[in-house]
Length: 131
Length: 385
Image 1: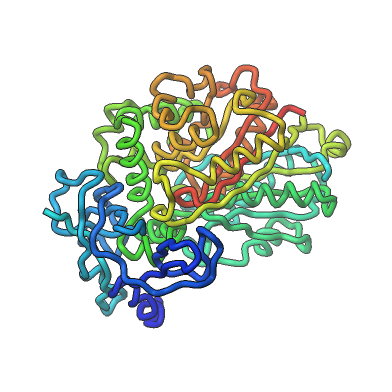
Image 2: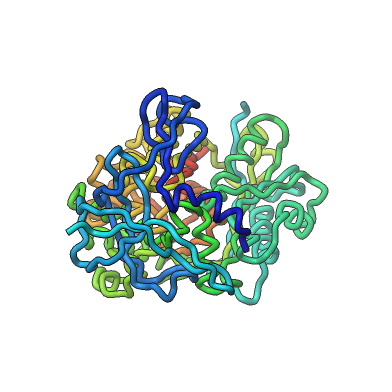
């Protein structure tokens, strides 16, 4: 079982969508890194990611891992945000047959999972189709 | 570097081996390889294993397995690169011999996956993906490959039926493999109508959970004749490449850059092109994986991999036979052992000992072993010496 440090240290990313922008080449990185994969630069400024993007791909998970067994079936996708960052998340509040590549999504703060026997609540971001 | 040969291979039937432990199945395969080579000593060994800690609660495998094989105190090391662990172990053994450090080296692979339940196995396998930015959100390996499939279908018009043909083709080959976990044929309709795991992949698009091990013995090519009566197989190339383990970090979700890179390095090292390869054992952990891999290795143009199995080009007897062993789909996928089993099949094909699975005129074979969604890839090219 992981300790609370593992959870709280990623709160800036999961709760506030904090990312890094490379001072050298302008590449946006999520999660933040110490070395830019684009130019090798080591200088960054902190940015907040935009809350809109479009789906690049998706699936519906019918058989889930143990923490998500009670949630199945649920949709997941990879979206590209305005600015170029790509991320993986669940797609909430959707009909499975409306999902398609290129679909606009917004990013919302949601409960993600319950961890351990105590059922500790873990939060983060999910995609929601923009209608 | 010295030229390196494979002089022995060993593998038992794979499956749900509840009555045997990890150390049992490894020792059986390693003993078969040692006997096949006819060698009387081992100088060092490498064992590919992805996650014995999570599957059976055992780390420190190198020493444990050397002890049970009766070869301690030789140097022995466990090698991990997710599902490419076996290929990576073989590559370490290749370097050990090529460098001149050791002469007779065992490369093995093992995974004991059925001592945990389905949820435990799913969790152990998921550790090959990004724990904090993929797995945290509920993604599974079938889910990640399903998203690659959707991206491939959207970009190139690859069809659901073309995916199914990969599974049908590999089961047809595996039906002739006495060591396969599922040695029977299936139909396209059965694939399409089996249980949906992650849309569009059904359970018959997915390789199974398997207990199994495999082993190979390597030595300098110049010593092969003196050490062993077995027909030596020469290692023409060994290549390894990496990519982001998070699928979403890649520019093209339907392209396997690490496979492309490892393939290019291997072709250059061997002085060959894709046209020179007579058959390939590739990492079909999911049907879409084989489609992407045969494109990245240059057997098919980008976007055209879907036609491989459907047209018969990748069947045994086709233009480029892929997975004459039955692949991961039919033979089974004990993750750490898979890369070594690919070597076992390739050596048997090149020796002409593959029985009903024999690829006619097999002189040069390739193996492609992949970790995660393609975050690591190991490619080898072997040839009749």
